[in-house]
Image (tube, rainbow, N blue to C red; front, side, top):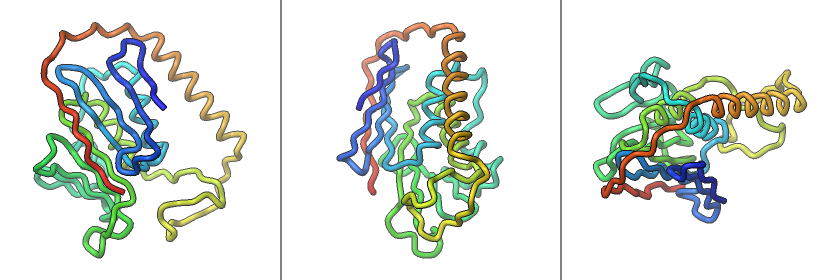
Length: 204
């Protein structure tokens, strides 16, 4: 599957046969860039794609500032979630951020990650901010009672939201998003750049 924006400067691809980088977001700005993710929850990916079609804000907090405001532990070049199950850092091989969501707490026996992702420095900062805002959102995810989850020990409770209400809310969100995107002025195309940054990292 491939989705391309009207000006051709951004495209989202889905590669189900590649568990390490199932989702790949390519973009062009001052340089070309690639953000990739494995089996990321749909709600988090949706926040990122919403930010793609909405006008960029005048100012954007840094990725670490967003996470610090949500109670994450912030260090030099890294952030760790309060439950120690998510680490965002800057590995030496990557000009950007790597996200690892872990099955067990980082300080215990983290093992293989549940899902991973990378966001390069060349990506627009408001996209990274939107992604980590969704990542740090404490609101529970809505799933079917018998849907598969990555964490068998996840707490489950019956939601008062009906399936009809969920579909209606999703449809209303898409309509509002389309209206906001259509009302925003088109961005001017940037000058051609000869630099490129396409990095494929991630494991499952």
